Image 1 (tube, helix red, strand yellow):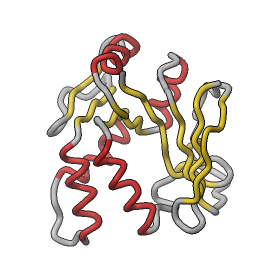
Image 2 (cartoon, helix red, strand yellow):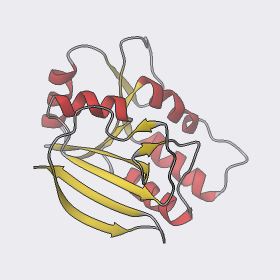
Image 3 (cartoon, helix red, strand yellow):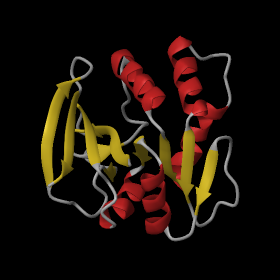
Image 4 (tube, rainbow, N blue to C red):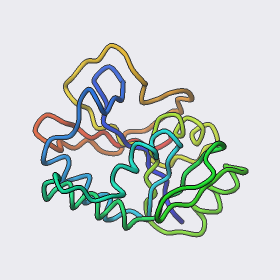
Length: 176
């Protein structure tokens, strides 16, 4: 059975904002290795549209960006949307009964499926489908933005705390 994992970079005050801060070289390498090991990724429309940037190789990329793009392009992707009519390579549109479709996906596959985006994570958490949360805490305070927990906040149990990239700590939680 597959495990749904919601993990994102987060400020100390609980916000996610890819424009305000991002991973350093070691954390980016961590994300590359993570993407290589995943069964696939599950996105909401907005984050999928942002991430589709990685679908086309760009000459200005360094080796790490090429490695991430290769890992992202190779993995399966599922996009939850009621407005999109098509998605790109290796992607499948999910638009019907999300609980049934994602539940069937979890039952059919083995390994980790990354959940992308707090809005989608909120919907999946309300349905009890998120199996693990990974908070990559960065030493920044934003004071605004999209919160990591955009809605339903399930009781959680800490299972790991790891220093990933000098000053970034990954906290791993599972529903209690």
